[in-house]
Length: 227
Image 1 (cartoon, rainbow, N blue to C red):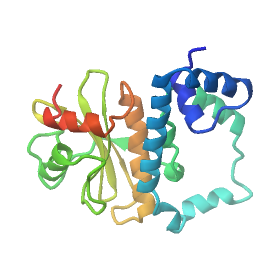
Image 2: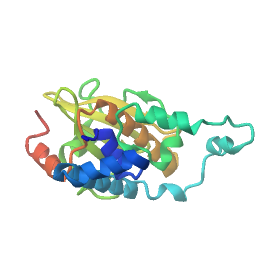
Image 3: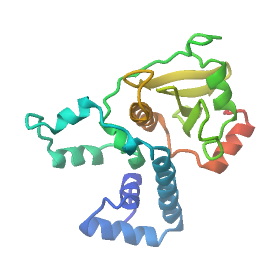
Image 4: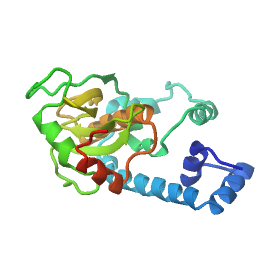
């Protein structure tokens, strides 16, 4: 058996059961490359879990507590699982803040607009210089992850002041593609984390492969994030 990337990710998250779990486990045990992929997946999930660690301490917004009322619609978990298995996914996106419903839109840096549709100085500087594994916890702009899209361009997801976005590098700079905005710019860390997760979902759809690890990020930085 040659497991799919989705099956390997599900195995790493402990989501497979029965005969399928046994077959995938056997295939991984016999393939060092698959073992490395499982290890990388779990390491990335742990790193993102630490990023969202403060979230559970925040008060739950009233819009979410309303979901617990007797009149709230019942969700068919079986159908939800089936839909998730039907599309490529990065399982670490299923963070606690997925409950926040967010809209994707093009984001523009309002502080300075050197060129329409491109990141301003503050965000561009962070995307040029910050590595996910080395950035300060209190950085005003946090880089969430890096990846390459279907054209081979380097793209990076970022978070700043309750807004998260995705920018891809081209010869003109960091072109902005998508963003998830929290309910209010002054919102709690819970809302900010929700926007991060929405953008990471968008990154999953844009990416041509897995997120870059620390070594690949350093190499991309040395090349100026250009193809």
